[in-house]
Image 1 (cartoon, rainbow, N blue to C red):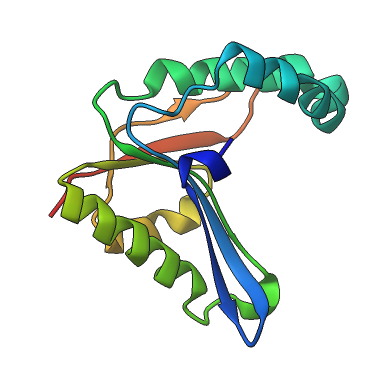
Image 2: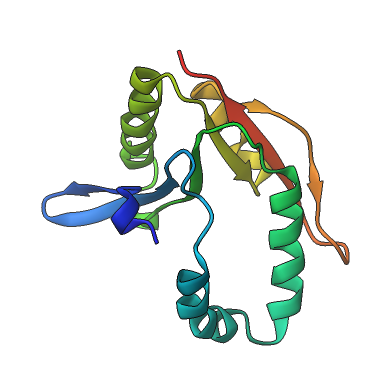
Amino acid sequence: HFLPRAGSEVARRDGSVGAATLWDPPGQRKAGWFEQLAMMPVMLWAFRSRAQASMQVMELMEEHHPEEPHWYLMVIGSDPSVRGAGFGQALMRSRLDRCDAEGVPAYLENSNPRNESYYLRFGFEVMGEIKLPDGGPSMWPMWREPR
């Protein structure tokens, strides 16, 4: 999904990948019918008995997702051995610089309250709260205007 849309980036040092981001470009977030069908077996395997709950979460995320064209940060992650070494910051800066150059906002859903200050440093603002069903944890949609 992300590779053909030029939405994936990795940060490397000494030949090893330390972190990665997966972004959807403006207007290209939703998977087509064929792509959804191709991903279904992997999704069912990954979520197993929680497939229905994961569908509910995705529906809630969709309800809160902004319509305005934007870059959407779906995933950011780093190897625990390099956390704090600037890999994630380099990846965020890379894509947000592009957002600024294109004059396009960015959006993400933060699922960890400890990460709020991290995203605030990059100019994201909390837009509200997505409360997950069955006592699940909250998510916080965050928006960043281009600079």
